[in-house]
Length: 368
Ligand SMILES: *Cc1c(COP(=O)(O)O)cnc(C)c1O
Image 1: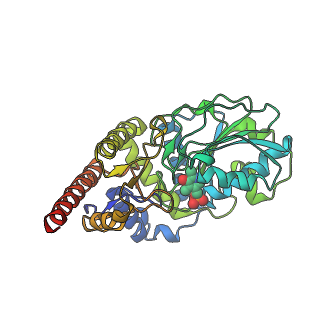
Image 2: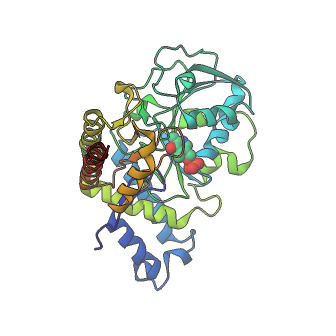
Image 3: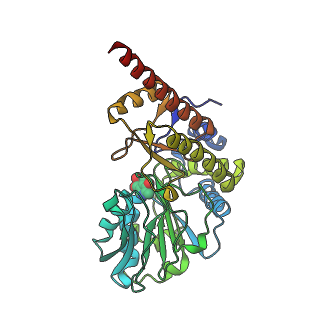
Protein backbone atom coordinates (compact mmCIF):
# COMPACT_ATOMS: atom_id res chain seq x y z
CA UNK A 1 0.00 0.00 0.00
CA UNK A 2 1.17 3.46 -0.94
CA UNK A 3 2.05 5.91 1.76
CA UNK A 4 0.41 9.29 1.58
CA UNK A 5 2.35 11.68 -0.60
CA UNK A 6 1.06 14.88 0.97
CA UNK A 7 -0.26 16.05 4.30
CA UNK A 8 -3.80 16.80 3.11
CA UNK A 9 -5.57 19.37 5.32
CA UNK A 10 -8.23 20.11 2.71
CA UNK A 11 -11.74 20.93 3.96
CA UNK A 12 -13.46 18.84 1.29
CA UNK A 13 -13.27 16.80 -0.79
CA UNK A 14 -10.90 15.60 1.84
CA UNK A 15 -8.30 13.00 2.63
CA UNK A 16 -9.27 9.32 2.42
CA UNK A 17 -7.34 6.42 3.97
CA UNK A 18 -4.76 4.84 1.60
CA UNK A 19 -6.44 1.42 1.84
CA UNK A 20 -9.79 2.93 0.78
CA UNK A 21 -8.12 4.45 -2.28
CA UNK A 22 -6.48 1.11 -3.00
CA UNK A 23 -9.86 -0.65 -2.76
CA UNK A 24 -11.42 1.93 -5.07
CA UNK A 25 -8.61 1.44 -7.59
CA UNK A 26 -9.14 -2.28 -7.54
CA UNK A 27 -12.92 -1.97 -8.00
CA UNK A 28 -12.44 0.24 -11.03
CA UNK A 29 -10.48 -2.62 -12.60
CA UNK A 30 -12.39 -5.79 -11.93
CA UNK A 31 -15.07 -5.48 -9.29
CA UNK A 32 -15.66 -8.64 -7.26
CA UNK A 33 -14.00 -10.57 -10.07
CA UNK A 34 -17.12 -10.12 -12.18
CA UNK A 35 -15.09 -8.99 -15.15
CA UNK A 36 -16.73 -5.57 -14.89
CA UNK A 37 -15.59 -2.27 -13.44
CA UNK A 38 -17.66 -0.82 -10.58
CA UNK A 39 -18.17 2.09 -13.00
CA UNK A 40 -20.06 -0.22 -15.38
CA UNK A 41 -22.26 -2.11 -12.95
CA UNK A 42 -26.03 -1.60 -13.05
CA UNK A 43 -27.53 -0.16 -9.88
CA UNK A 44 -30.38 -2.69 -10.33
CA UNK A 45 -28.16 -5.74 -9.83
CA UNK A 46 -28.37 -7.75 -6.61
CA UNK A 47 -24.61 -7.17 -6.15
CA UNK A 48 -25.04 -3.42 -6.03
CA UNK A 49 -28.15 -3.64 -3.89
CA UNK A 50 -25.89 -5.43 -1.40
CA UNK A 51 -23.55 -2.40 -1.42
CA UNK A 52 -26.39 -0.05 -0.52
CA UNK A 53 -27.61 -2.43 2.19
CA UNK A 54 -24.16 -2.73 3.73
CA UNK A 55 -23.59 1.04 3.69
CA UNK A 56 -26.86 1.43 5.54
CA UNK A 57 -26.08 -1.37 8.00
CA UNK A 58 -22.64 0.06 8.76
CA UNK A 59 -24.02 3.56 9.29
CA UNK A 60 -26.64 2.14 11.68
CA UNK A 61 -23.99 0.26 13.59
CA UNK A 62 -21.30 2.99 13.66
CA UNK A 63 -23.68 5.80 14.57
CA UNK A 64 -25.99 3.72 16.73
CA UNK A 65 -29.07 4.69 14.71
CA UNK A 66 -32.21 3.31 16.34
CA UNK A 67 -35.16 1.80 14.49
CA UNK A 68 -37.74 4.37 13.47
CA UNK A 69 -35.14 6.22 11.41
CA UNK A 70 -34.60 5.79 7.67
CA UNK A 71 -31.27 6.32 5.94
CA UNK A 72 -31.42 7.88 2.48
CA UNK A 73 -28.77 8.50 -0.17
CA UNK A 74 -29.39 11.59 -2.25
CA UNK A 75 -27.40 13.60 -4.79
CA UNK A 76 -26.90 17.34 -5.03
CA UNK A 77 -24.67 17.77 -1.99
CA UNK A 78 -25.62 19.23 1.37
CA UNK A 79 -26.57 22.41 -0.50
CA UNK A 80 -29.56 20.66 -2.08
CA UNK A 81 -30.75 19.78 1.42
CA UNK A 82 -30.92 23.51 2.16
CA UNK A 83 -34.00 23.66 -0.11
CA UNK A 84 -35.22 20.05 0.14
CA UNK A 85 -35.83 20.45 3.87
CA UNK A 86 -38.13 23.50 3.70
CA UNK A 87 -39.76 22.11 0.53
CA UNK A 88 -40.83 19.01 2.48
CA UNK A 89 -41.36 20.28 5.99
CA UNK A 90 -42.09 23.98 6.08
CA UNK A 91 -45.57 23.70 4.61
CA UNK A 92 -47.17 22.61 7.88
CA UNK A 93 -46.85 26.05 9.49
CA UNK A 94 -45.17 28.14 6.80
CA UNK A 95 -42.48 28.99 9.32
CA UNK A 96 -39.17 27.49 10.49
CA UNK A 97 -36.52 28.42 13.04
CA UNK A 98 -32.82 28.64 12.13
CA UNK A 99 -29.66 29.25 14.13
CA UNK A 100 -27.22 31.45 12.22
CA UNK A 101 -23.70 30.51 13.31
CA UNK A 102 -21.70 30.41 10.10
CA UNK A 103 -21.39 30.61 6.33
CA UNK A 104 -23.35 27.43 5.61
CA UNK A 105 -26.12 28.11 8.11
CA UNK A 106 -26.56 31.47 6.38
CA UNK A 107 -26.89 29.69 3.04
CA UNK A 108 -29.50 27.35 4.54
CA UNK A 109 -31.43 30.39 5.79
CA UNK A 110 -31.39 32.09 2.38
CA UNK A 111 -32.71 28.93 0.67
CA UNK A 112 -35.43 28.37 3.29
CA UNK A 113 -36.64 31.93 2.85
CA UNK A 114 -37.85 30.97 -0.64
CA UNK A 115 -40.39 28.65 0.98
CA UNK A 116 -41.78 30.63 3.88
CA UNK A 117 -40.95 32.64 6.94
CA UNK A 118 -37.52 32.09 8.51
CA UNK A 119 -37.27 32.87 12.19
CA UNK A 120 -33.54 33.38 12.93
CA UNK A 121 -33.45 32.55 16.65
CA UNK A 122 -29.93 33.93 17.13
CA UNK A 123 -26.97 34.98 15.02
CA UNK A 124 -23.26 35.56 15.59
CA UNK A 125 -22.83 37.18 12.15
CA UNK A 126 -22.06 40.58 13.72
CA UNK A 127 -19.10 39.01 15.53
CA UNK A 128 -17.74 37.37 12.37
CA UNK A 129 -19.15 34.05 13.59
CA UNK A 130 -16.50 33.72 16.28
CA UNK A 131 -18.90 31.96 18.64
CA UNK A 132 -22.05 29.84 18.59
CA UNK A 133 -25.03 31.60 20.18
CA UNK A 134 -26.51 29.64 23.05
CA UNK A 135 -29.09 32.01 24.47
CA UNK A 136 -32.27 31.71 22.42
CA UNK A 137 -35.78 30.31 22.38
CA UNK A 138 -37.37 28.33 19.59
CA UNK A 139 -40.97 29.31 18.86
CA UNK A 140 -43.13 26.16 19.17
CA UNK A 141 -45.26 27.34 16.26
CA UNK A 142 -42.38 26.65 13.82
CA UNK A 143 -42.30 23.51 11.65
CA UNK A 144 -38.73 22.65 12.68
CA UNK A 145 -35.49 24.05 14.05
CA UNK A 146 -32.32 23.92 11.91
CA UNK A 147 -28.75 24.11 13.19
CA UNK A 148 -25.25 23.32 11.89
CA UNK A 149 -23.16 21.07 14.13
CA UNK A 150 -19.80 22.19 12.78
CA UNK A 151 -19.07 25.42 10.95
CA UNK A 152 -16.54 24.25 8.39
CA UNK A 153 -15.46 27.68 7.16
CA UNK A 154 -15.14 29.41 10.54
CA UNK A 155 -13.90 26.47 12.60
CA UNK A 156 -16.52 26.42 15.35
CA UNK A 157 -18.53 23.45 16.60
CA UNK A 158 -21.57 22.79 18.75
CA UNK A 159 -20.39 20.65 21.65
CA UNK A 160 -23.92 20.12 22.89
CA UNK A 161 -27.29 20.36 21.21
CA UNK A 162 -30.33 22.30 22.39
CA UNK A 163 -33.57 20.61 23.29
CA UNK A 164 -36.15 21.83 20.83
CA UNK A 165 -39.95 22.04 21.12
CA UNK A 166 -40.16 21.28 17.38
CA UNK A 167 -38.33 18.69 15.20
CA UNK A 168 -34.56 19.27 15.32
CA UNK A 169 -32.76 19.22 11.96
CA UNK A 170 -28.98 19.33 11.80
CA UNK A 171 -26.42 19.84 9.04
CA UNK A 172 -23.57 17.53 10.11
CA UNK A 173 -21.65 17.69 6.84
CA UNK A 174 -18.27 18.33 8.38
CA UNK A 175 -18.35 16.36 11.62
CA UNK A 176 -20.52 13.31 11.02
CA UNK A 177 -18.72 10.13 12.19
CA UNK A 178 -16.11 12.24 13.98
CA UNK A 179 -17.66 11.88 17.45
CA UNK A 180 -20.39 9.94 19.18
CA UNK A 181 -23.77 11.62 19.15
CA UNK A 182 -27.19 10.68 20.44
CA UNK A 183 -29.28 10.28 17.28
CA UNK A 184 -32.52 10.27 19.24
CA UNK A 185 -32.10 14.01 19.89
CA UNK A 186 -32.55 14.69 16.18
CA UNK A 187 -35.39 14.32 13.69
CA UNK A 188 -33.23 14.73 10.62
CA UNK A 189 -29.47 14.75 10.11
CA UNK A 190 -27.82 15.36 6.75
CA UNK A 191 -24.26 15.40 5.53
CA UNK A 192 -22.47 15.56 2.21
CA UNK A 193 -20.10 12.59 2.11
CA UNK A 194 -16.98 14.39 0.92
CA UNK A 195 -15.87 15.74 4.31
CA UNK A 196 -15.70 12.71 6.55
CA UNK A 197 -17.58 9.83 4.91
CA UNK A 198 -16.26 9.32 1.41
CA UNK A 199 -15.90 11.08 -1.93
CA UNK A 200 -18.19 13.81 -3.32
CA UNK A 201 -21.42 12.81 -5.02
CA UNK A 202 -23.58 11.36 -2.28
CA UNK A 203 -25.39 12.97 0.63
CA UNK A 204 -26.60 10.96 3.61
CA UNK A 205 -29.93 11.82 5.20
CA UNK A 206 -30.93 10.14 8.46
CA UNK A 207 -34.56 10.91 9.13
CA UNK A 208 -37.14 9.95 11.69
CA UNK A 209 -40.03 8.13 10.04
CA UNK A 210 -42.57 10.14 12.07
CA UNK A 211 -41.34 13.31 10.42
CA UNK A 212 -41.80 11.86 6.92
CA UNK A 213 -45.21 10.45 7.77
CA UNK A 214 -46.43 13.95 8.60
CA UNK A 215 -45.62 15.58 5.27
CA UNK A 216 -48.81 16.79 3.62
CA UNK A 217 -47.59 18.95 0.75
CA UNK A 218 -46.95 17.86 -2.81
CA UNK A 219 -43.27 17.65 -3.68
CA UNK A 220 -41.74 16.62 -7.05
CA UNK A 221 -40.28 13.11 -6.96
CA UNK A 222 -36.59 14.04 -6.86
CA UNK A 223 -37.27 16.38 -3.93
CA UNK A 224 -39.51 14.01 -2.02
CA UNK A 225 -37.86 12.19 0.91
CA UNK A 226 -40.72 9.67 0.91
CA UNK A 227 -39.85 8.58 -2.65
CA UNK A 228 -36.26 7.95 -1.58
CA UNK A 229 -37.48 5.95 1.40
CA UNK A 230 -39.96 3.87 -0.60
CA UNK A 231 -37.43 3.13 -3.33
CA UNK A 232 -34.57 2.36 -0.97
CA UNK A 233 -32.69 5.32 -2.53
CA UNK A 234 -32.95 3.61 -5.93
CA UNK A 235 -35.77 5.62 -7.53
CA UNK A 236 -33.27 6.79 -10.14
CA UNK A 237 -29.60 6.01 -10.71
CA UNK A 238 -27.72 6.65 -7.48
CA UNK A 239 -24.07 7.77 -7.40
CA UNK A 240 -22.84 4.17 -7.68
CA UNK A 241 -19.12 4.79 -7.36
CA UNK A 242 -19.44 7.30 -4.51
CA UNK A 243 -21.58 4.85 -2.56
CA UNK A 244 -19.06 2.10 -3.12
CA UNK A 245 -16.11 4.19 -1.92
CA UNK A 246 -18.18 5.28 1.06
CA UNK A 247 -18.71 1.60 1.87
CA UNK A 248 -14.94 1.05 1.83
CA UNK A 249 -14.47 4.03 4.14
CA UNK A 250 -17.14 2.86 6.60
CA UNK A 251 -15.49 -0.57 6.73
CA UNK A 252 -12.21 1.21 7.45
CA UNK A 253 -13.74 3.20 10.33
CA UNK A 254 -15.18 0.01 11.80
CA UNK A 255 -11.85 -1.77 11.53
CA UNK A 256 -10.11 1.10 13.32
CA UNK A 257 -12.42 0.76 16.30
CA UNK A 258 -15.47 2.76 15.25
CA UNK A 259 -16.57 6.31 15.93
CA UNK A 260 -15.30 6.23 19.55
CA UNK A 261 -11.78 5.59 18.31
CA UNK A 262 -12.16 8.33 15.65
CA UNK A 263 -13.30 10.72 18.37
CA UNK A 264 -10.32 10.05 20.59
CA UNK A 265 -7.86 10.43 17.69
CA UNK A 266 -9.60 13.63 16.58
CA UNK A 267 -9.30 15.06 20.09
CA UNK A 268 -5.60 14.28 20.19
CA UNK A 269 -5.06 15.95 16.80
CA UNK A 270 -7.01 19.10 17.70
CA UNK A 271 -5.24 19.36 21.07
CA UNK A 272 -1.80 19.20 19.45
CA UNK A 273 -2.67 21.96 16.99
CA UNK A 274 -4.53 24.33 19.33
CA UNK A 275 -1.71 24.01 21.85
CA UNK A 276 0.76 25.25 19.25
CA UNK A 277 -1.53 28.08 18.09
CA UNK A 278 -2.04 29.22 21.70
CA UNK A 279 1.62 29.08 22.65
CA UNK A 280 3.25 30.36 19.45
CA UNK A 281 3.17 34.19 19.43
CA UNK A 282 3.04 34.25 15.63
CA UNK A 283 -0.33 32.49 15.33
CA UNK A 284 -3.83 32.98 16.71
CA UNK A 285 -7.31 31.49 16.59
CA UNK A 286 -10.34 33.80 16.73
CA UNK A 287 -12.99 31.36 17.95
CA UNK A 288 -14.26 31.50 21.54
CA UNK A 289 -12.44 28.62 23.28
CA UNK A 290 -15.46 26.55 24.27
CA UNK A 291 -16.81 26.65 20.71
CA UNK A 292 -13.63 25.64 18.91
CA UNK A 293 -13.99 22.93 16.30
CA UNK A 294 -12.11 19.66 16.57
CA UNK A 295 -12.49 19.14 12.82
CA UNK A 296 -11.62 22.43 11.14
CA UNK A 297 -9.02 24.51 12.94
CA UNK A 298 -8.83 28.09 11.66
CA UNK A 299 -5.85 30.28 12.40
CA UNK A 300 -4.20 33.44 11.24
CA UNK A 301 -0.73 34.86 11.45
CA UNK A 302 -0.17 37.93 13.59
CA UNK A 303 1.95 39.63 10.96
CA UNK A 304 -0.32 39.42 7.93
CA UNK A 305 2.61 40.30 5.61
CA UNK A 306 4.01 36.83 6.45
CA UNK A 307 0.91 35.00 5.22
CA UNK A 308 2.25 34.05 1.81
CA UNK A 309 5.66 33.21 3.21
CA UNK A 310 4.13 30.74 5.68
CA UNK A 311 1.91 29.25 3.03
CA UNK A 312 4.87 28.62 0.74
CA UNK A 313 6.98 27.32 3.61
CA UNK A 314 4.25 24.81 4.49
CA UNK A 315 3.80 23.82 0.85
CA UNK A 316 7.49 22.95 0.63
CA UNK A 317 6.96 20.62 3.58
CA UNK A 318 4.26 18.79 1.59
CA UNK A 319 1.22 20.41 3.22
CA UNK A 320 -1.83 21.09 1.05
CA UNK A 321 -5.29 22.54 1.66
CA UNK A 322 -4.23 25.02 4.34
CA UNK A 323 -5.39 28.24 2.68
CA UNK A 324 -8.78 29.31 4.04
CA UNK A 325 -11.35 30.43 1.45
CA UNK A 326 -11.95 33.79 3.11
CA UNK A 327 -11.76 35.49 6.49
CA UNK A 328 -9.18 33.51 8.38
CA UNK A 329 -5.88 33.09 6.62
CA UNK A 330 -5.46 29.39 7.30
CA UNK A 331 -7.54 26.38 8.12
CA UNK A 332 -6.39 22.87 8.86
CA UNK A 333 -9.08 20.22 8.51
CA UNK A 334 -8.41 17.24 10.74
CA UNK A 335 -10.90 14.71 9.37
CA UNK A 336 -10.90 11.06 10.43
CA UNK A 337 -8.44 9.88 7.78
CA UNK A 338 -5.80 12.49 8.61
CA UNK A 339 -3.06 10.75 10.62
CA UNK A 340 -1.79 12.27 13.88
CA UNK A 341 1.66 12.40 12.25
CA UNK A 342 0.39 14.98 9.73
CA UNK A 343 -0.70 17.27 12.57
CA UNK A 344 2.67 16.82 14.23
CA UNK A 345 4.32 17.73 10.93
CA UNK A 346 2.21 20.90 10.71
CA UNK A 347 3.12 21.91 14.24
CA UNK A 348 6.80 21.36 13.50
CA UNK A 349 6.46 23.47 10.37
CA UNK A 350 4.88 26.28 12.41
CA UNK A 351 7.72 26.10 14.92
CA UNK A 352 10.42 26.06 12.24
CA UNK A 353 8.81 28.95 10.42
CA UNK A 354 8.68 31.00 13.62
CA UNK A 355 12.35 30.30 14.34
CA UNK A 356 13.36 31.23 10.79
CA UNK A 357 11.44 34.50 11.10
CA UNK A 358 13.08 35.30 14.45
CA UNK A 359 16.43 34.58 12.83
CA UNK A 360 15.65 36.96 9.97
CA UNK A 361 14.60 39.69 12.38
CA UNK A 362 17.90 39.36 14.24
CA UNK A 363 19.80 39.42 10.94
CA UNK A 364 18.02 42.62 9.92
CA UNK A 365 18.89 44.13 13.28
CA UNK A 366 22.59 43.33 12.70
CA UNK A 367 22.58 45.11 9.38
CA UNK A 368 20.99 48.28 10.76
C1 LIG B 1 -19.43 21.63 2.75
C2 LIG B 1 -20.63 21.96 3.53
C3 LIG B 1 -21.88 22.21 2.91
C4 LIG B 1 -22.04 22.20 1.41
O1 LIG B 1 -21.87 20.92 0.94
P1 LIG B 1 -21.99 20.53 -0.60
O2 LIG B 1 -22.01 19.04 -0.52
O3 LIG B 1 -20.81 21.11 -1.28
O4 LIG B 1 -23.27 21.09 -1.12
C5 LIG B 1 -22.96 22.47 3.71
N1 LIG B 1 -22.84 22.53 5.06
C6 LIG B 1 -21.68 22.31 5.68
C7 LIG B 1 -21.61 22.39 7.16
C8 LIG B 1 -20.53 22.03 4.93
O5 LIG B 1 -19.37 21.82 5.55
